[in-house]
Image (cartoon, rainbow, N blue to C red; front, side, top):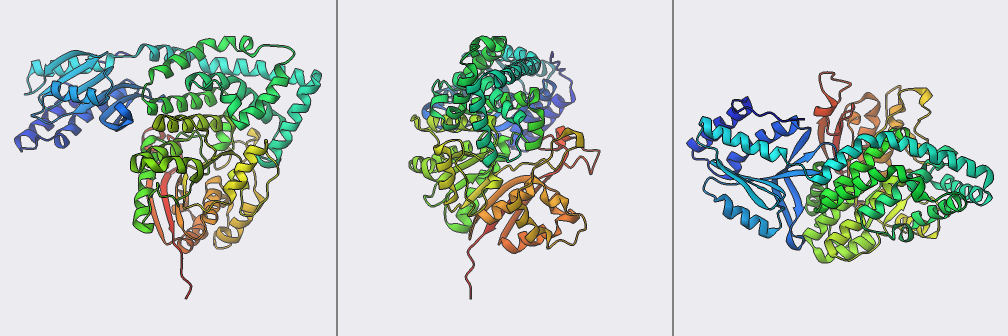
Length: 591
């Protein structure tokens, strides 16, 4: 859409009024005046279907962490369209820009701003410098012109990506259905494929879900075929299917599928346009965080075009980076406060039991590297763990985590802490059968012996299906459900207790048992347990089992308050309320 900015827009007038008030009262420093310009950028970003992310973190020269005052990013793909740097009244913008560029700031599209002037760099060149204060008709017009030029910039690769997205959702079901037809034909006529498929299915039923359907297994094979090229190209890792233990197992099944009748490259040719757009757009994301957000967005949109029921069942939601950062930083501070430890300490084992695409683990790696770089290799190899039950996010988490570690250390090393397994099946002392090869099984067995100090993440959020005909129910877990009955349910005075078996409540019960004698649990969850009648027993047990509890209620329950909007009042854009919850358990000395 074409952005229209009028010099007399209210947001422009509010900016000038705010700056005048600050300057007249002697508040000329960046912290006082920057919020008024941020309001302007936020306002016009929304008109372009973009977001302003303040205090945007990225890496500069030598991988040093940098932080811009703001980044204008695409919504929902999180691609950066421009950066903003606020400066004090007396700062010379050209001098400040030179210093920033020397430290590694990109020069594609960055706007430097002080109360009196702006300077815009695009494609490595000074595009324009303009005086914007005091408040005159001419200065307002110069501000508007600078803003229009800033918002008009579009990286060429992003244009191709946006065009590809429009056709992506239509193409994916078409190609997937073609693959499904081929798989079913091969099951009837290809004995080797049928045997490999059945063996793979038996492995899945042993640990992932004893009731998993043949259709779900077919979906996993289709997901692998459709995304394998993207993982290799985007992350420049042609050996992915050879190095990743799960990918190796699935490739054996795929080999029997493709041996007789077709070339996978030829079959997937109709998706070439999409693949090329993904690869070129990803190549344009020179900042590792951009690349991480970009691939997460590709994944989310894949599920919008395919596997919708799977996405609904498992609550696939990309945790906003600001939430991830807040939770990790909070846990680090509380570790120091309560245990005299940090996330980088050698005796602090960490797990994200519902890792998704790896957001929490990637930020943990960055945090540990920032705090104590020498501790990162040991933490990566021995004290950082994660689980995922779905194939696509497992693949993406593997790539994101390994790429982040490589980005920080310049050394490639496979991440041995990620398991393809259903966390809710990993109850204490439970023995698991051989699952998708010895390597994955060995990792799960090692994980079960770890004493975790930190459990952090975003558990599944789905709380039941809308329509019984959807055949999309959450599955039972006998051992975990028994623990809920013994604790939360038995202590509840409520008549209806079905809500106590929602996935996020199962996650709380699992984590409370898994953390052992002491540690920290940090989850972002549905907030119904805070005041719901059915959760009185849960609240009682949380108070008994933990020494300190911190709750940040983010609200956003659209169902309780129809005046709210899920897109603007909820951190996930969903209908149910959300809260960030941190539970601390300390050893208790028996007297």
